[in-house]
Amino acid sequence: MNRFTRWMTAGELGELTGYTAQTISGWARKNGWKRIPLRGRQGGALLILITQQVYDYFLATDKLRYSAHLYSRAEESETPYETWDNDILAQVIRTLETMSPQEQARLSELINEEGTAGLVKRLGLNAEK
Image: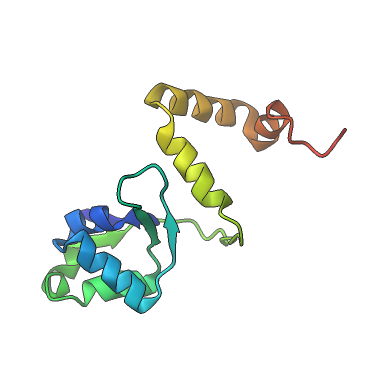
C-alpha cells in the first residue's frame, strides 16, 4: 500500500502519484497548500503539509481517481498540532536530515532514555538559571 505521510516533498509526491515534481509544486502554489523550505537540498525543495484537503485533491486526479483504495494516509494520533510563526520546525527537520544515521539513532536513544526534559537540560535550554 502506498502511504502519504504528514510532510512530503514534491519529488516524493511525484514518485507516489506519477506526476512530476513541477506539476505538484504548481498545484501547491495555486491551491495555497502549506509549504516550508527544505534548506540544503538543491533547487530549493519544499516540504508540503499533507492535509485532508491535499490528500483529497490527489485522490481526485485522473491518475489516482480509480485506484484510491491503494493509497492511505499514515495513521496519526488525535494529538492536536501546534503551529509556529517562525521556522523552528523547518530548522529541526533540516538538522535531522543532515545527521548521519548513527547520529540520528543516538539522538533517538537519548530522547527515549531521558525524554524531552533531559534533552532540554543537556542542551542548556532549561529556564532555571
